[in-house]
Image (cartoon, rainbow, N blue to C red; front, side, top):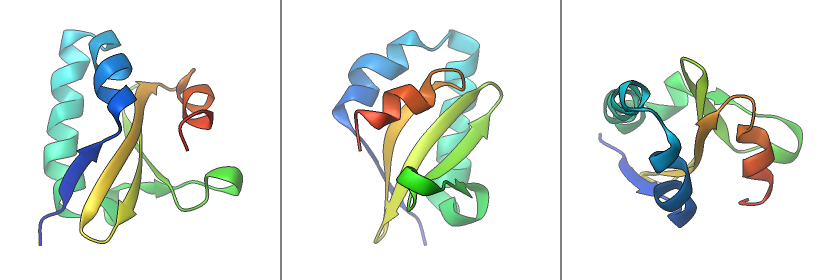
Length: 91
């Protein structure tokens, strides 16, 4: 069973262009291998105000996502230092 990957508009517009080339390919591979197959297995559930969301660690970057039916909706891809500040304005 494959999951469909959806990106929030700001991820494509703001987050992805800021990622360096080497990390970009690592993140893309993580999304295509882990989130498409078993996002609930690879993602770690978040707590408190982000309950219902998951994070996937790729080096120093975090992918914040939510699983809805057979879709994985990605809300942020950013460095771990700033990802939680960014996600606050998007959920």
